[in-house]
Every structure is written in C-alpha cells, then in structure tokens.
Length: 232
Image (tube, rainbow, N blue to C red):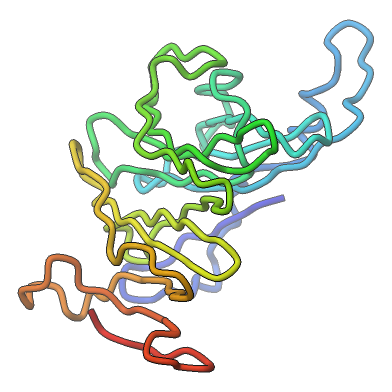
C-alpha cells in the first residue's frame, strides 16, 4: 500500500498529527483485476511503478497482469481512487513519468514501448483525456532507438523541471533532455561516443547562470576509472 503524509512547505518531515493518505492500494488493483463473472483472479499482478502527478491529485501506475513483463497504464484520482484512464496504452515497459508541471492545462505522461524482443525502443507522449487505442495512434512518438544494441529508459529530474531519456548499451550512453513545458523538444546533451558513459541531473542552484540546461553530470570521461562529477 503506497501512502503519503502532508508536510509544511518549509519542512519535508510530516508533523506528528499528520494523517496517512492512501495513494495506491496494490491489493485493490489485484481485486479489481478479477474476472467480473467468475471472480477468478489474474495469474499475475505486478505494479511496475507509481507516479504522483505534479498537481498531487492524480496517480499514474503501470501494471502487468500476465507475467510477460508487458505493462499497461492506469491513472486514478487519489482522493476517491476512481479510475481516470485505463486500457488505452499497452505494450509498455514498467516505467512512466509525468511530462507536465503542476497546473498544466493538458497533463501529459511519457512512456516507453517495446519491440518484439521486448527492448524499450520508442518514447511516447500521452495527453490525458485523449481516446487512445492499443496501438497508441493518437499519441506522439518523440524518439525511436533504431540501434538494437541500445535500450531506453526514462526519468524525471528531482526538481520536476526536466525529463531525461537515456539510451544505453553495454559500453556507451547518450542522454536526451526534455523541458516539462508544452511544445518542448528533446535535446541530446552529448552525442554517443563509444566508451563514454554519463548520467545527468538538473542543478537548480545554477539556474539563471546562462547555461541552457544547468546540470550535474556523472561520467567516465577523460579516463575517470570510478567516474567523476561535473557541472555542465
């Protein structure tokens, strides 16, 4: 059971009288997946990830009910646990991130789909409220990784300002950044170079310093055997 407690704006630790609020009950997910007629339970139920929206009123999560490691997207309202969307997006990986900020007129989600070998290779942008088929015809594909040596994963910066798309092989990595604003486009930070590995995180302390993307980067550049931390 995923829960949260309210805290004050200047204190990240909940007060002594703060009450738990259920964000998502995985037991309920399992119960609701039972056959409506026979009440037979699914043979498998795995919740891949749980992401609270920037406005704190919705929760998006992925669920695999077959055991094939192929996930579907579900969005609920936290207050009453009512389902906002489900069954529209499938063939996903376990991960999903919010692609918009709090107060966005059109909340969006970013997710990955898999090829026949279950390699995460396409990044999609999904707008809540759209009627979406299982083939995600109405969603926008932002990126496709055509090199079968690379797989994709996604994440969001701790600041909530950016989303990161990571393309990784055994030896090499490439990071793309997406500003969580309407109409933003992916930008590659450093084109892939064999043997170069790096990850990035937003550095709010340097915001306004003139950099297009103020970042902290962990990399093995310049022969750093155990990696090094750089400001970009």
